[in-house]
Image (cartoon, rainbow, N blue to C red; front, side, top):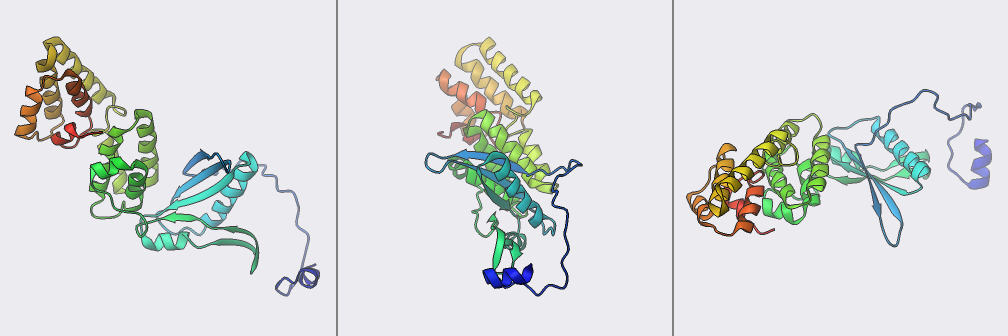
Length: 280
């Protein structure tokens, strides 16, 4: 058979030593758990739907290339959408390894080629400014995942956590869970969990939600702007934030109830008192 393929197709098939028949049954009797880190479906107007299989890879793993090829084949067979493999790597060495094409078949004429799209420290910007993160939250998310081993990783995560307050709460929750899963078992993951318990606690922590509601109630009970302003300051103080004197004065002298209500919501997430007044 191999010699016939060489002759008819001109394939550079290696000289065989021996050939034998293998069972053609590819059924998997025992269930095997195979789980991609994150799977997103993206619908387009002109080219149909794509499935983004996003994997976080912190080190080389000789078993992953075969798994990635399986993921893509299975996704295409099950959903009939085009699968796209995206690999997030926190170091350049792993990123270069993950970017190598995966080829199955005869050298020079592969039956299947997998070309992962890799995001790593060398092609993803470092974002440590909350305003910059808020301008493009998805890029800030990738920045946090691909630069999680940097000395300033905490600053990247803090900027992202503040940026999540600028988007829809449900979407922010999805991003938060995606980031936690992508950070794996790393110190950065613990840092992220701690940030989520404070900076974005309005959609993650029951304790913080209760505290925010109590602050609102106190503001209403005391009446008008003065009570809301005091509720904002008490909430910031309870979170242990250092409120600048000029910010404290601005809050206390504000008579715009709509602005005060916005600041009260932001008091649960900002990392600095001046961030209360940022334009969204």
